[in-house]
Each structure stands twice: as structure tokens, then as C-alpha cells.
Image (tube, rainbow, N blue to C red):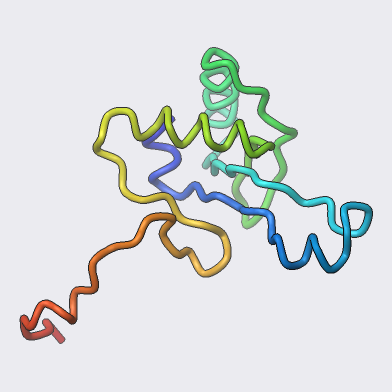
Amino acid sequence: MGSYFRRNGYVRRQNPIRLAREGYLGYKKGDEVRLTARDETELRRMQVLLVQAGFRPGRAFVKGQQYRLPIYGREAVRRFLKLISAGGTTKPAATARGRQPLRSKPNRKSSGAPSRR
């Protein structure tokens, strides 16, 4: 599952400011992980692996000529990210908004080394 997520999966986080402004009845979006499958075979493989790992994947949908498979809920997102990072070789996960990492990375330009432009 980690390889699918690192390839082009992402995390969508609930916007607490919007939730406070619009309230729960107006803004019902929560945290979710989205995995991307290239074809139906890969989608089915992902669904089976998620169920075997104890997750309840949402209904898959097509976006950008690919299948998206969501995993909903803050606790499910936490468990999923913990599971795929257990090996210690995962890159920081990205969010859908701006694809910014969840963990901070050191700034390369502050190292004093010349840039490779």
C-alpha cells in the first residue's frame, strides 16, 4: 500500500477555519486519504489490500482518467499513515492543497551550498 500512496496518493485534511465559519451542517468534509489506481485491476488489488489491513475504503470514482479510492475518517487516516511509514522508508505524505509535506523539511537554500540552476 505504501508504494501506491508514495506514487501519487495524497491526504486531504479538514479545514478547521471553514468548519468554524460554516458549521458542521454547512461543511461536512473531513480527513481522508486518496489512492490513485491506473486501471480497474490495480483498483481491485488496492481494495483487497485495504480490507485485509482492516480499512473500509470508500466508493471509488474516476478523475483525470484514473481511479481514486478514498479512505475516510481522521482515525483511519492516522492508522494508514502509521502503517505505511512503519518501514521507515516513506517520504513525507502530501496534502491535496499545495502538495505541502505534513512534516517539515530542512530548507536547502539555507545550507550555504550553491544552487544547481
